[in-house]
Length: 124
Image 1 (cartoon, helix red, strand yellow):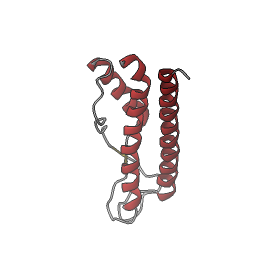
Image 2 (image 1 turned 60 degrees about the horizontal axis):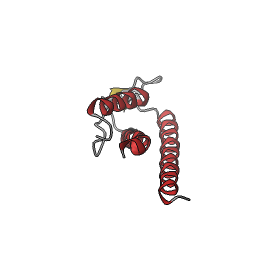
Image 3 (image 1 turned 180 degrees about the vertical axis):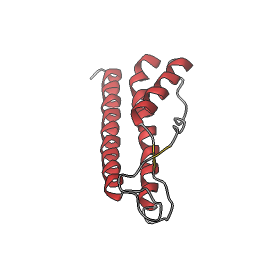
Image 4 (image 1 turned 90 degrees about the vertical axis):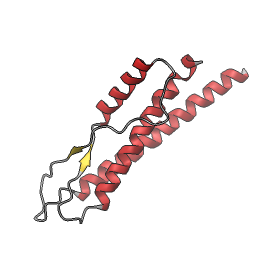
């Protein structure tokens, strides 16, 4: 059974990480006017690679309920503000929108894979 669900597990890991990143980016946007706030983010590609390698090390089909939060890094501002805030609202909004599109695409992949499995199981 784990061979059938391995692809879905990989997408689920990506979905967990995308949801976590959306929260981080949303926090950055919410604190755009907070003096001294430092924008944070993580490298999605390396976090996904690390999560998948950990899952493979744990054995097929042994996925945690939620992927561990990757290390958050501070983002350097191209134009730092006088109050020490490093949030660049245009950059954060663009990253937020990009992440939302990736989240939606991953959901569509999962839905497609589930429909494919169901049609294979039911013989249609």
